[in-house]
Image (cartoon, rainbow, N blue to C red; front, side, top):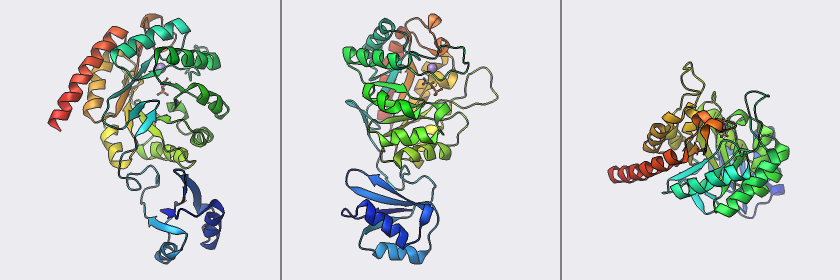
Amino acid sequence: MIVVLSLQAGRENAVSLMEQFRFGDRAAVVPHGHERLLVILSDEIDEEKIMALEAHPLVDRVIPIETPYQLVSKHHQPEKTIVKVGDVHIGGADLVVIAGPCAVEGEEQLKKTALAIKKAGASILRGGAFKPRTSPYSFQGLKTEGLAVLARVKEEVGLPAVSEVMDPREVDDAAIYLDLIQIGARNMSNTPLLQEVGRQKRPVLLKRNPAATYEEWLLAAEYIAAEGNTQIILCERGLRTFEPYTRNTLDVGAVPALKEMTHLPVLVDPSHGTGRWHMVPDLSKAALAAGADGLMIEVHCDPERALSDGRQSLHPDRFSRLMEQLRKLKQTLEQIK
Ligand code: PEP
Ligand code: MN
């Protein structure tokens, strides 16, 4: 249940209201936009208390919400959230493609790729600096130096940039370099990290853990929103299944499902979703046809020599061809809507 407080209600008033109603730990006061506060209640509240709340002078209205995720639910906000990353709007009419190498390997490598993906029509540059690798003996990323390289290249090329953070202590520094902060699949349930990105001002790209249900994923987004940051983009990136041919099994069905559940934009990452570059074009088209607000695609100028995920990275020529096909597909989908 969401209790929308009146404009003049400050935090102290909100806390005393919770005490008056004896909500204890079952309620949280969360910021909403610039001026308003909300009280979120996770438990069922009896009718009498709801009526008393509705009649309270500090309360504007009470919105009953039946799902455990509340701020990110469509019930709370039926209109779609448009997330702004630099000048790029995600969740609106534009097809947004985030592209770039799995990892920042150096300035020359990144710049070459950035120029190529921009020319092909991508709107956001990706490049991992803190790499969550499966093996401790694999390349772990250039870390803060990688973020600095990304920041220089994005300025030179003129694209906003996204990169992953793994540690709450890295968030504030990373936010200086980046336009969009990524929470990777492995950290989807790292609640201190989610809360930390919820307290800063940059938008957040939240990837789905390969074993998470839609509800668990939306509750992870709720952790970010509950700290005041509702500029959140969800990204499907494949599930762990019994199929060994692919690295993960891409759940394209997540897109229409999530559209019913949440107002947040949904992207699809067919690179990690398959682990094989030759499957990326077809699954990019499938994701777009399923209603995705955009895609995240790994691109490398020399995939065979990439320090991570070369097997799933598209060469810029192939990426450019795919972008052309996606533009045509988008037009066709608009015509048959
Ligand atoms: C990535 O996008 O760089 C990444 C590591 O993806 P995921 O968290 O989905 O595995
Ligand atoms: Mn990768």
